Length: 478
Ligand code: NAD
Image (cartoon, rainbow, N blue to C red; front, side, top):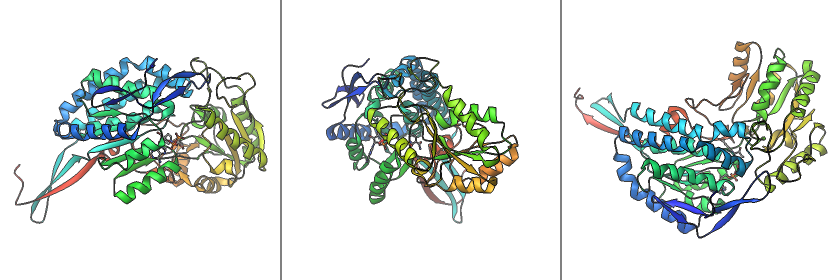
């Protein structure tokens, strides 16, 4: 375990001047000292990224792909210890951690390493005066800011395409997961990423704000809450700085009246509760057809009652603790607001009696929720489900769309075509049919208050290019 708080700047591990303890989610005990980057640390990281930019962006795509392939291998070789570290930091059950941490970032880095070798850097198009060369150039120094819930995967969403495109990066990790962020630094050093190409500065919101408005930054890419996203978007708007925002959600699971209930409830375990409810794309508003309402409710209550709550390091655990005391207070506050509303609490609703340490909350289900209630409109970021009855597909779609957010959603049905029609009508960036699994070859992101722009897939690489058109007279040489 790291005991000295460090940042990684210009290819060097530096002892942090300012430290913040990282607390183990399941025990509430200190896990290690994390760096809490100062403005001077951010300034040094941006300066290093600027200095490294010219060489990295002018390296051939094949060369960058080779370095990134070595980077992926270095991440993968650390996967087991990374998985455990993240689960200790944020409470992620190990069964999820095994895929979402060490292995997923490595796979994503490999995907973009391959994609950059297949992406034309210059395209020639005929024009009125001759032809135009359309160039994809690296957008420059990237400020990447990530939350604690999937610290490795969400950082990889940004680092992998940015580095492949030829950008240099300053990654500001969240203080709750300051320790695992340094794994990227160890892997970068082992893979021979040139100094300054990737800089890691864990720290709080003020360090993030300093980075966003830094004059040395060319592009901001952020994942986190809608409130912070609005603040960052305002700054980037004023500076006319390109920005990608992946924000919160309050997605709906539409259970159609022909759904196979056993399969649906099994699928919803993941789609509505994965990572202890701390996932942005969860279908946490469950829309149930009135004709099968009682059946759906009983099945959901049965499902949450059978979940294994406990040590995230135990492979059989379904629900671990929330990330922090602050997050647990927030979630318990939402549960109180549900109890005070006209909704009926039918499962959970408190801290589990057999988990006196750490930040656990029992999986909770509210029935008869009105879609305008706080627990149906606001993102809770904990294991709390709101069940809402509806009549007819049209009302289900209207309820799903009656939300400030538009990140994700799911449709559950035995009729695939009917489900896809419903999915087409839902106003979100992604929808799963009878499951919800991200596909890293396809764009991911939200509409409305869930964000601006897309990550993953070729679109996620495009986000790190600036396009230049060079108009030439005469025909192109072949
Ligand atoms: P948060 O917005 O408070 O923090 C996220 C990150 O931003 C942290 O690193 C934090 O230090 C930094 N930050 C906060 N305010 C900032 C500011 N003004 N300027 C610059 N940086 C700032 O969010 P959180 O509570 O840590 O994370 C949970 C939120 O993230 C949830 O709302 C969730 O939906 C969202 N999220 C979205 C996605 C997605 O892809 N859409 C994925 C995961 C999480």
